[in-house]
Structure formats: C-alpha cells, structure tokens
Image 1 (spheres, rainbow, N blue to C red):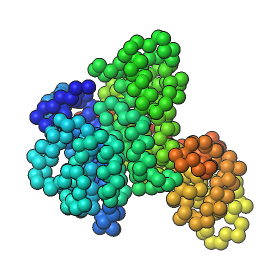
Image 2: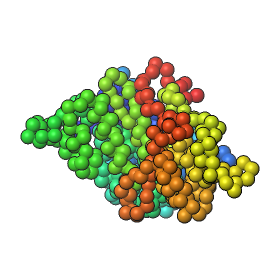
Image 3: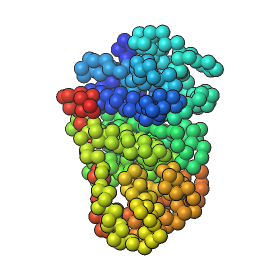
Image 4: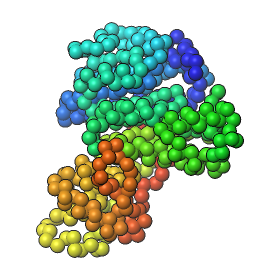
Length: 431
C-alpha cells in the first residue's frame, strides 16, 4: 500500500474510524499512565513506557474533512511533553518506513520544539523519547536495553498485525507465567475483513479454496498471518450474517491472545453504519483491566458492572453455611472472597491459583488451589483449557454463569454497546 502525506501528516480515508480511534487513544494514554505511574500517592514515580510499534508520523490527515489531527504516537508525545509529572515516562516510537520516520521527526520538532531525543543506542537520554527507524526485531533488541517499567505496547498497523509480531514482543517481555507489567493494545479493523476497503477485498463466505478469487485468496493469506495459523477458517468462512462472522473472528483472535494474557478485553467501536473496529486490551493485571472496562463504559454510556455484594453474599451463605464454620466476627470464607473477586474483577471470569489478586486473600497457594477446586465442585467454575506460552500444567477455570445466576441470582456483564461517533467530543463525554 503506497503511503500518502499531506505536509507531515499521513493521509488516511475514513473520517469516522480514524478520528474516533485517535480520540479514544488520546484519552486512554493519560488514564493508563496515571494508574501505572503510581498516581499522586506515589508522586508518579514508577517507571512507565508507551511503545508505539507502528508510530506513523504523529499526525493524521483526514481526507474527507481535510483536517489534520494527532495520531496515537502524537498523543503519546503530547502526554510526555505537556505534563511535568511524566519524568519517568518513556516514549518509544518504532516506525519502519523511512518516509514516515522523517515526517515523524519533523512533527516532533514543529509541535514540541527541541525535545532532545536520541536516535540509536544511548545510555543517557534525558528526554526519555526514543524514535527508531527500524524493523521490529531490531527495535526489540534496542528496547531490551531501556528500563521500561510498566509498559503499554500499541500495535496500530494500517490493517492488521501478524501474530508472529505479537509473539516476538510477548516472548521478550512476558518471561514468566502471566507476568504483570506488560500490556498490549491491538487495533483490529474488524469490518474490513468482510466488507473490504479500497483495494483490499473481504474474506470469502466459503471454505472451499477452489471457489476463491485471487483477491480473496490474498485476504485469506493475510488473515492466516493475523491468527498465526489456519484454524480460524472453518468458523469464519461461512455464509452466516456478517455481524456473526465479525463476532467469531474477534472471539477466535481473543482465544489466541490468551496464550500470553489471562485477560483480553475487546472494546468495539461503530463509527458509521456497518463499520466496526476493536481496540483489544491484553493484560495480566486484574485491577488494570477492570479500570479499563470502566473507562470504556464511561465514554460509551455502557453500564458499569456492579452486582449487589450484600445480597449475593447472603445467597452464598444460605447455600454454603459449612464454609463459615470456625469463622468469627465478620470474617469471610476464602471460597466466597475468591468467587466475588472473580465475578467483579476477572475479565471473562478467568482465573487460576496464581492470579495476583488472590494472594491478598490467601498467601498459601495450596489453599488457593483447594478453594478453586471447591468452587468447581459446587459448579461455580468450569475448567478452561487454554494453552499457555510457558507450557506449564496449571489448571485454569472460568465462571459458570448459569450456576452463578441460578444459585446467587446475578447476571454476567452485558455485552458492550459499541461507541459511535457523536457530534460532541469524547472529552465532554468522559468528564
């Protein structure tokens, strides 16, 4: 795909999709940084990093309106340069295209003046801004030498990112079983896979390869790269309605991302009729995922999930009085405490005994595993067989919402209603 530029901005069609995505990222970056830097309590002292793996030029020119806006990397730079508390925030901007990279440097100089960034390896970089004109593998080797701290990696390709790129970054950063400290946001222009865009033809509705056109074969090959295999084809290359195929594609993609992340949160956006894209958050940090879910609910008007603790607790006590034997005062049984934590804080109700938030309930891992097995025996949890990247035989579970509803009387979170572009700005919505 030939890149076009207007002055220094990369020129893109799709007023609604491009604008909406950039606005959301512009709100999310400060939100994420305030949490992961430790906030005011810690004087924002914790080391953090935003790593843009498809940085572009920092600006986006919207063809339909002839307006230039900040791209995602521009928002990362704006956060860094406009907030005096971001001294320990690093911004790493990886762009492989030479022309894009030159425009990016010009945007940095024009918008933020002499930022003092350093190109290439540097032991001392007072700006904490690292632009890199590099392929991903070389960039990762360079990034290894930077103290990132809590890091957010944003994959923002023009259409899709190859799963191998996801693997390469995750393998470098997540070296232990669902280790915290690394989060991904992956942009997927979901509807493009079925409706097409410009020269890209959508996926076929038949799995029979002999029925595909040359263009459809190319689309399938690109989707194979997105998933890292061909196992997605049977459930997606069907004649089902497009909205069902879009849902299947995201669910299958979500399943693959669980290899590296316990929690995968797809946030849908519907900027105009029939058009949908997802920003997918991947994380191993329960509190961060819950906060992001609430952030999304805040800007979209979706209800925040808040089941009634007191009523649910009373139902649990009525069904399982034996778990309270020997407990005094207001003490709660470990089974209840872990179940409530899973219901309220664990995306998709996924858990295992090594979940970090369980350690605050019970330090003994054997006791935590016993509690999960009790919950499984009572029907609240069912076994989940994701293959983890470390090939460890650790049993994972998922909430059995049928049992949760029947016994405790609470429903799961309702599916997200996508955010559509509104006349008023997202800043007004989020305030």
